Amino acid sequence: MAYITAPYACDPANSRGRFTEEPEAPMRSPFQRDRDRIIHSAAFRRLKHKTQVFVFHEGDHYRTRLTHSLEVAQVARSIARALGLDEDLTEALALAHDLGHTPFGHAGERELDLCMEEFGGFDHNAQALRIVTRLERRYAAFDGLNLTWETLEGLIKHNGPLLDADGKALGHYAERGLPAAIRNFAHAGELELSTFAAAEAQTAAIADDIAYNAHDIDDALRAGLFDVIDLGDLPLAGEALSDVIRSWPKLDRTRLIHETVRRVISWMIDDVITATQKRAFKLKISTIDDVRALDEPLVMFDAQMREKNRALQSFMQRRMYKHEKIVDIMSRARRVVRDLFNAYMSEASLLPSGWREHGYSDEDTDFARQVCDFIAGMTDRYALEQHKRLFDLDPLFR
Image (cartoon, rainbow, N blue to C red; front, side, top):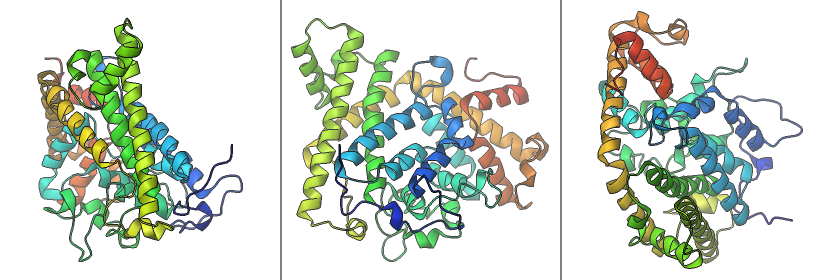
């Protein structure tokens, strides 16, 4: 089957290249190489034991950051193919979008940000940039992964511009300014932080929304945080449930849940494809520059689906993310992060050998960032092991 390439797709033959020059690979495009480097990175492997919502000890079937990233990549590729975008760049960005996450999900990130408050804070998106430009140390000629301009742009701008036209920080960066990891990146100014990223990055971002909305429903039902019947009055999820019951009135619970979730995913994918194609036609989008110059994303749901998505997210916030079971385990997980940070800050010798050899100075801020890098890279399991080693206490189970 032949696929039509959109005129506003990123063309690997016209990539702006890498900040450290390398010979091209004869059998792979630059974006394929980016994807492969991400998959083979240590940070990507560690996602296997990093929390999505449930900590690893709660069961083997709940999603982790790794399985979530793979699911995001699958959704993103489906959308990219239908829109005629570069699938390899889209997949690379989908696989990389969670590289900077701490152990214990957003709870770990919030606690590490508090610990780092006087040292520049912590942001998982900025940490992902730090990982792929500095912390991965695999190649002889450079630190990081030396990804292409387009992948770096998409990695830090997939949720939209970071600066306005006057250089003021936007969104959740507006109050505190850009994170230090972005400000200190030598080529940050070359990534055009006041524009939207290409459509491939926007596709990865909306695929993230689709995947975690739908699959968190699956995990929450598996955990018994609410029952499938509770979805009945919701737009989208309730419509999907009703459709399954009409077609299969005697279906067992496991299949009922799966059929409901797959409809939610399919309907959201179909909507974003149709809505994006209509917007591209209406706005006469014909180049990548046209995409970057818009004042809102090109790749997005239509207004009705956006409202349904907001209702679903609100339901999940109340019934899953703020469920007492989740809140309790995450409050104890935050204690692990806080205890580890305080211990390493008070006694540098507790850090593994080699970490003081990474080019940090002895100034407090730099040492705090070193500790932050170390903790942020931990898996849930490793963080718990280190906490037990240092404090002879298993905080999640006592």
